[in-house]
Image (cartoon, rainbow, N blue to C red; front, side):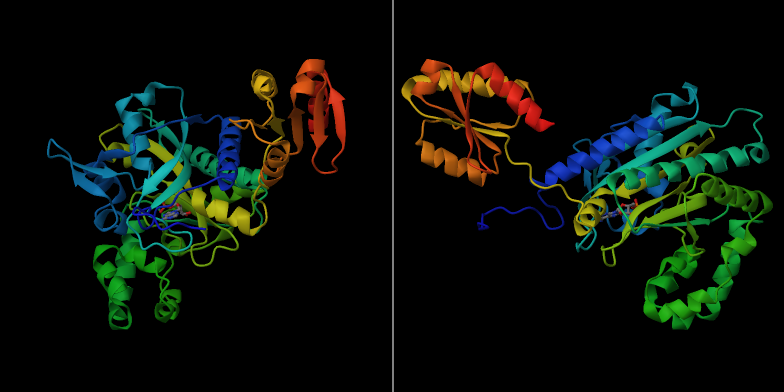
Length: 437
Ligand code: AMP
């Protein structure tokens, strides 16, 4: 029945419509409720920010910044961009509002649209929705890294536990959690490993595709992300970061695994999980779901100590994640966990010039009691009303004609079996409330 209109939603964007939006609402309410139980509060940053904020935090060499941002010159000639993700905004807000002086750690979550100019396909859109959370804690003067490693590991594990709790609450099954540690930037840790990786990649350079060849220079870790079939055997033979972590990172990683086990969160290790954005360090994780084809990552996250400082704040630890809500919804639908369309509880079939005031009053009373009510705006034949009530999936029709108004005894018809009962207004509310259970 689609009509070809002059205007259509822009490629990679879409309208979310009822009844599907009921599932979106349920997912978002569940997120709020589960995250609330872990002590997180909601932050709503703006949809656009200075381009420089994303360039600085996500990294100039990432696809997100170099190719995918929707950027434009504002009237004052500054460059602004639609947000491709929200971690940078949360960190900016943390600094801007002096949140380091709040009781630590500061735990924030957000929901909303993100924008990336990617090639659209199933599960990949140009306007997509993320549900994410961040835990930020500014390092106190004198606090030593070694002491807090175990604490950081417990925070990482709790954040992952929270995502898994959220997915479990939604009834999502067949999830796989993969974790890794990508160390920290020191020469005896990741930087040393990256040099080794670069040297090894140089040796096989002519067997790699153009993207990976370019990344040998710009960011060799990204080569590990490659999905190119022809590169898989070469990548499998490369040195692994786990063998080159410094002692602190390696201990922290071991503690994250112990903490996950303690919380009963099953995981798999994946040494190739480096994540697409530049600011990650140590713990990285990704969750994949069934039934999504190639775009099966529903959540990605990791630790990003240092990002707040990079953006001009105090040295601050951070860990967070972003869930792809579009994919989460797809996965729930594929698994048959989507909600059935709700229809109406009561359709008010009214007829007779003097009946409308009673019909309006009945609609108000029923809506105040929380029922979904359809009130036709103009008088129509009972037969037509009952047909519409059926098409809207109504459970009951409240039949109001002149007789009903005169006697104060209204007719309630149960549409599933056609039975009818005569009830006063107060009995009606009682009967309907009881049937709601
Ligand atoms: P990222 O911010 O790239 O770590 O992505 C986190 C999650 O957001 C991914 O695991 C996806 O579920 C989702 N996501 C990222 N890009 C898109 C997109 N273009 N369309 C739909 N979901 C996306």
